Image 1 (cartoon, rainbow, N blue to C red):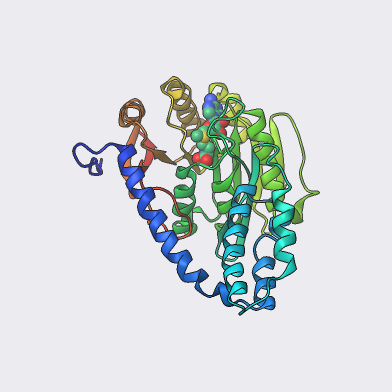
Image 2: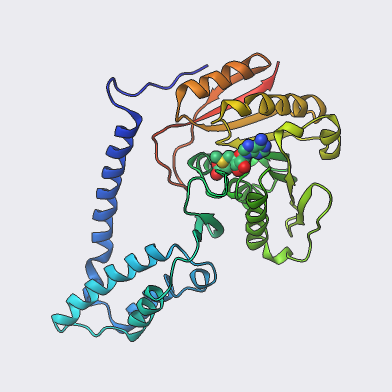
Amino acid sequence: MHNSPSPPHGTSILEQASVYAAKKKKEVREKEEGILKNIEEFSLADQELLLNVTVNSDLVLKYPLKLEYQKAFLKLILGKLEKGNLKGSIEIHDDFYSAYGRIISRNESNSEYFKHYVVDTDVISLKENINLISEGTTGLKTWQASLALSEWALKNKNYLKDKTILELGSGIGLTGLVIALKCIPKKYIFSDCHISVLKNLCQNIVTNTSENRDNFRLEDNVVLEVELKSSVKLSALNLPWEEVDLSICNKIGNIDIILAADVVYDSDLFSSLLNSLQCFAKYCKTKDIIFACTERNPETLNSFLKCIGEHFVVTEEKCPAQQHFIWSPTPQVKFFRFILK
Ligand SMILES: C[S@@+](CC[C@H](N)C(=O)[O-])C[C@H]1O[C@@H](n2cnc3c(N)ncnc32)[C@H](O)[C@@H]1O
């Protein structure tokens, strides 16, 4: 098994993360300054265009970003425009004040908002939650391992094409939607066990596959079934690992690949997770299992690898380089492949 270098002696993960955050902040500020340099000279037409592709775009009006982001964005732009106006070089478009007024008069009434992930020409819009843990679950936001697994999927499109894929602990669905829309599998089965997560997951699937809105059904443990125009079949299952057995596996049928992002964090869940993987490998004839694991606590991850290593051959795979998605490199996301011994 390939081992990644451990952090420099005396540097905690938290310290590394804060150094990284400061560096990123500086890079973003420099980039913003470059982009924003000309705003003080923006004509009324330029200003209208800027609004129409940001806070006034149909996408953001329908699926609003965090209000806090929108406020900060408009405040920054208005500050620049007001400077230009004072110099007498430009007028400020009324729509800027209307948009700012509309946003500051709103209350962030609940902790839900939308995030938009741009993948080449597609935009995936997900309803997310501000909080890391909400309603007793970690599943209502997108975690960095899911971003890394989505990146991995885009690099392995040919491998995923025409396969039947089951995702464990899908959360609100980023990885599955990326794969369904960009990698054209035969069938993608999302799964989770928490009622609010499943509700948001189904809503996100419907939002991003809206042309098929009528074509879904509810049945038994199947929360949602959708067939896309590309003939990719999607379903979302209520699938607690504790309940996976021969009869559940028979209902699901054969699975070529199992994927999971950030499901190795609680040692109390290891035995049910491991048992479910053994069932899938045995009864659903799954040949390949890929886990993207965020290494928050090396001991927890190593203890899971030790348990699973008793039944599966474990290989560490390379984490893909960031191209479509951005995630913090600390704590590291590690990739593992498990094949039944
Ligand atoms: C940290 S979140 C990761 C969500 C998503 N994969 C991501 O990376 O954004 C862990 C997910 O595992 C699910 N989960 C936890 N225990 C589970 C269990 N026993 N059976 C099925 N899913 C479970 C949670 O509901 C949650 O959605």
